Picture (cartoon, protein in one colour):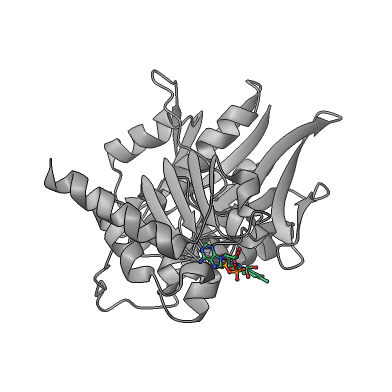
Length: 329
Ligand SMILES: Cc1cc2nc3c(=O)[nH]c(=O)nc-3n(C[C@H](O)[C@H](O)[C@H](O)COP(=O)(O)OP(=O)(O)OC[C@H]3O[C@@H](n4cnc5c(N)ncnc54)[C@H](O)[C@@H]3O)c2cc1C
């Protein structure tokens, strides 16, 4: 029986979606004779969180409770995961490619003397001679091609995977075994947290948006119109790198390889060329509407509705139509 473990990241004392996404995707890809195991490090056990992890498809949850897990600390978490891995010897170990996962993953792989594929956007598994192999695909060479990387010689085979790439499935009535891990932690936190001050976020998380109104260089002078359209449809504004680099919109609005990966119901792309680095962050949107003056623009290759037009003319008409509808509601 081979095993794939997934680190359940917690931030601000609650679990992040990426851990659940990785459980669901692993469960979907792996056969029944493989185990998907969640590694739940927590300062207090929350039954609702355990239920969420179970419903996402975990066959086992290894619960490691300690007051030191209240806030993330590189040394403490590395040591804790190292102890778990050295006890259970997983075939594969997956983490979210988040600030925490990007800090923890490489340090842990160095401790375990094993390979890690960073920032993957696609997962696959294959079995060779009864050995489970992880195939992690990520953009390479400036995003101009995708490389599938395997590290089969050492275990666990590790990867960090971008959040928002996979959906969280619901496995109702799924049997999940709970295992309590009680090893003593003989490492001190490297940082003492005196106080946590949260910055006010000006908008909701792009990964949760159902409607995204995005603009690129072709509409750089129309961002106020795009903002109004986003408000009228109850969606979120997003941008390409060309816009963020000019500081027209902040980095947290960036979609793509170096920004956020999104999969909304509708993605309206105006004046965006469709460079691979942008498309890799939004091509799983359910409906893509693109407006571009260039009939050969790459964005049209993935668009469900293609509008070949000057977006600076189309957007005011769209805004007026939406305002009109609002007034008559
Ligand atoms: C390592 C690396 C990482 C990167 N990461 C990202 C990333 O995460 N996200 C990202 O977005 N980019 C990223 N990029 C940059 C990416 O390669 C492109 O340069 C960028 O996406 C281009 O943005 P754009 O489409 O807005 O601009 P352009 O490529 O300049 O395209 C503008 C488009 O607007 C059209 N247009 C012009 N006028 C109009 C008009 N009036 N109406 C309608 N259409 C019009 C044009 O035909 C054109 O297609 C990355 C690049 C590298 C090398």
